[in-house]
Length: 96
Image 1 (cartoon, rainbow, N blue to C red):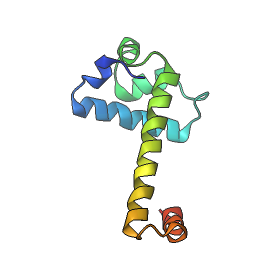
Image 2: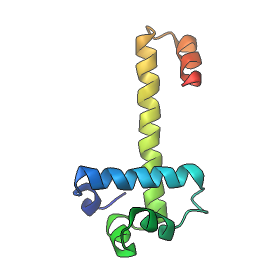
Image 3: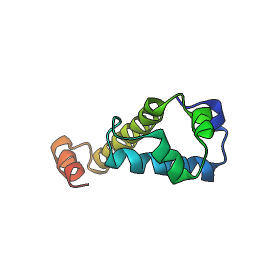
Image 4: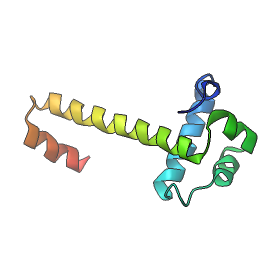
């Protein structure tokens, strides 16, 4: 889990970090990504990164958790808008 320092950042900085992490992990596996690449993209020091996260795995699992929540919310939204018709909703969700 990210540190309290991360959660206490101003929203714009927190969102920049999240955006950079999403971009990184969308194009690379956890084993290919590096802290150096992330801090270079964000123009922050390695020390700052480690104030927010224990390690790259910590950052990865935060993004994974966020993406999973987003996916579930999207599906529930589609399901509700289709009167809980499961098959229909799954077909719509697959196209999203």
